[in-house]
Length: 577
Ligand code: C2E
Ligand code: CA
Ligand code: CA
Image 1 (cartoon, rainbow, N blue to C red):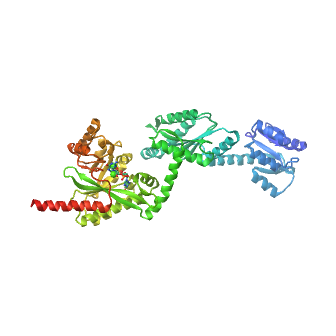
Image 2: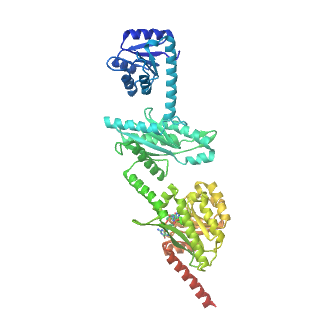
């Protein structure tokens, strides 16, 4: 019984109290017993100190023990086990008391030191177990931080304080940048240690009274209570970024992770718990889109954007079923001959109400939701089919002619797109390497090892690979050598500068020289002016694409351009003979 040091007895009958105190003292002489005789004295005593066990009389004057029990637990006056003492042997009443949160129900007539000792021990054990279970239910196992439910109930409590006292508070939504890479590179054990360390760093960035929670994976949340000014919030956000951003050493490995933080304010943004977290999450996404390792406050435009995106998400699902997509084709011109030497298939969404929607407005959402897999399959099938039609109709005969299709990273990693290509390649009339998959530089670099593996497999089957938007990512010369590439497409932002900016021109000329050194064909994107084309010609660039020659055009138009080119060729051939 050494763990029991302080007991509170609440009983309005003084002789019953004396008897109980005597029995308790017989259990252990060192136990200190405090007495209370009504609700007020009980509450005063409970607010003064913690007790290890509480005895509560069921017949407590005008107010019965069950009501008092509910008040004590409702006001969270104690976390100690409560044992009900009663004069009536009523199993229904007993059950009611236990259900209300009492740990035991003893008959006053039966009390002796043995029964008391056993009851106290059992009550304490049950209470400890309850506390343990509650702890497990309320906390994240890995970091010991509050879990999502506990965090949200903390937010709800803070909201009720805001409503009563008119203060305000902030919720931070924090997500680690590129955490997946840590898990992929060093394994989950290292990832787990990192999450624990990050949890400590977050806690050391805020006050003890603030709630820090782990919402799952690498997502954390902070509730900063009772904040005076926006400057204070900014200071804490910056401090959190700085604290987490320091290099960590885990098992001898130096790892640096940075977080992105979204901030929502209560009540100015909303006073609904779920929404606060949702808005902070939106702001976090915005911080990520602004380059990561940043904080960002929620703004109303983010809500509009999110609404628009969720609408697009819903409509995209129907769009696949209703086949509302169309492929336009933009000609690629061989600079030396001024002939169409290929086309790039570019998707459009013919929305029944909103008209033509640009891929920039729906491809990112399709990628995020995984719908890109189905859309991508449709694109590849449609483009392969078109290539097949042109080849068998004799509209294209040049073996160097290429049909380019844009591919998202997840499509390379998922096998189905590759299966579709394989099927087409088997029954094809078109030549090997005529089908080109365009993959953006940033996508390739994001997971270079996997990209190399997957692309080698694809290129072994007779498909060419183009690195798209070159210059906007961070590909190095080494990357170009690692990947099985045929084409390099220089991004429009460089082409824009070619005729006006000396530096810009030098960069392009450097890229072309470098690409040629490793046997890549160079395609210039977004050529709009004659001067740009003249420069590219001087630099020995192979192909170009852009509004100067043609915008992306529907299938019938591109087919007639190709047919025209074909008949011009025959006319020339005959005239030359
Ligand atoms: P991208 O692959 O870099 O495609 C080139 C974009 O530049 C196209 O925009 C094209 O219309 C535009 N463009 C071409 N020449 C010029 C020019 O001279 N001036 C200007 N200002 N723009 C020019 P589009 O069709 O809106 O496509 C945007 C992006 O959407 C594409 O960029 C590509 O990343 C993505 N995309 C398009 N179709 C697909 C698809 O089927 N699948 C996937 N995953 N992405 C696609
Ligand atoms: Ca492209
Ligand atoms: Ca491009």
